[in-house]
Length: 195
Image 1 (spheres, rainbow, N blue to C red):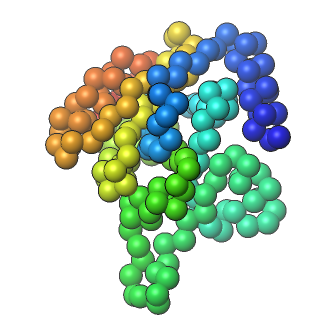
Image 2 (image 1 turned 120 degrees about the vertical axis):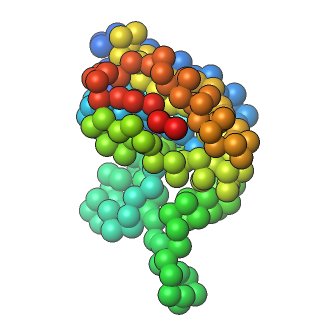
Image 3 (image 1 turned 45 degrees about the horizontal axis):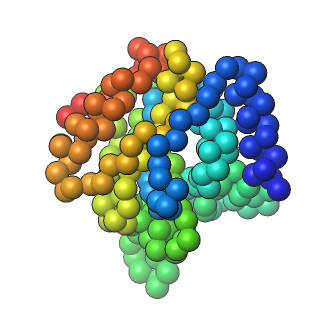
């Protein structure tokens, strides 16, 4: 019910503002890590989240478990929040690495899981991206989907899938080539990952 209501609301907002969606992901692909870029404005969340509702993609994002306690859980869970607890389950001394925790989520969600990651990690200029998305996709053996916003043409979408090869530099060159053709709301605040 919530997702249907949000889809209708998103469609109305996109229609009023002249935006459209473009989804190039085959329907049979149910597990992937989604990059969300460029990320230079708070408006990015509105358009990106709306686009995923319109495309019917059951998007999830990870958040500290403390953010999914009552009453915040009433908002965060329907939006797709997955609480993360990195404490060891067997009383060990070391916390699990976030990459391992997120890769394990794909094993726990057999039917479908799409995890959204903003590799820039900030709305300010970031010439070096956080590359956890690549390690998560490799460890979980799932592809990376290239989610994007292109403001001049008012398009929110998902481009191609990248299957990691183990050659990080080569794979990032392909990802960079894709994002170098997308224009952020504030272009001076966006950079592809500098290798």
